[in-house]
Image (cartoon, rainbow, N blue to C red; front, side, top):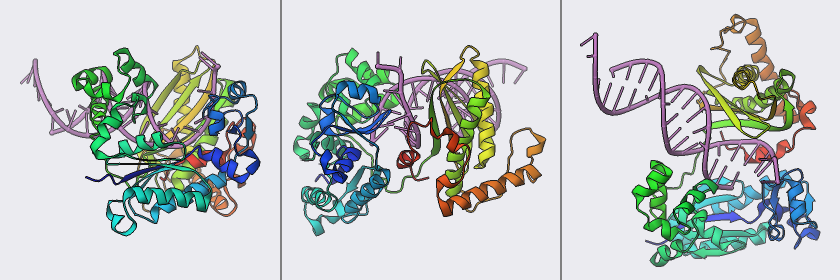
Length: 413
DNA sequence: TCTGGGGTCCTAGGACCC
DNA sequence: TCTGGGGTCCTAGGACCC
């Protein structure tokens, strides 16, 4: 069987875009972000600078590091444009994130040549039309194609011949496998497993005991390149959330109230925009020592009203704090809504589930809130997100990441 | 070296139903 | 009345990915 699955991955995407926009940055170590590194150029990675790293730490590792603010609109535009190049070859494209996608070219080789030729053309076009480097892996399975693109980086192409795929796979470190992060890597290292080949030779029963039934079975299969996953072209999110790191702040209502309202606004307005109210509300409270606690509640009826979501979240947070009375400082708050439903049209959805008489369906307060959400949504439709909101301005200074960056990571609901 | 924000999936225990 | 077993939902936590 011919390898027909491509995994295409733009190299150091945000940093490459910045170097494209400003030629004086080319060939230099740069980091997008400030307080935290959102992306680092390959020149910066040489020094050990990585995404997610505190800016201060990055500067220590690489004193000549250049920080740039970030052109988030350009990232969206160029990421979309790169995916569109894949769309020109096949409709079987599964987008994983802003800068990464799978494509299955099995049905279009008679038009465009072998998978390897198609991959080379995609790379050439992305470079010529967008000015960006993109690496591509080609293999029989998604997992192997993804590994191949990692091996191909930066700016390369790796086609894995089915005749030698296990030899290719088995020499590589387990950390390259999908699903092996720091914790699993450490557990495997404890029993002497460092390479995918060693993993493959390990009895799957032993892996299941070490990692749990699902993870053990999955890794045993992937190590032999048994990957049954097909491309999923129309994935929709199963949850929507928002979070905000706070530094160290007192665990008091005057702190968490406004933050929760702002988070609820972000989440609920997205749910309303796609008519996907949700039944389960989860909050996460992280304390000063970075240990975090979650609390959730599942309602009888799905909700998407901002004030309703904020109130439920606040009740859950109060529950967390009551159960952890010694914790006086919080460092992060998060709200997530899951069990999303389809609602064909925007229904007159009103607070249910809280035993507060004032919030009964059809009450004056409920109706007023429904109207407020609708009014805010309409204003934003015309004038943009920033035009109106809850406490956004007051919180602006504390936000470590711009809203434009958050939006890049949002999945289609 | 304590560091962002958006997600997904798995596990384990308990409640509840048949 | 006691007992067993399976399925499903909910909750809390953890690991992982980009």
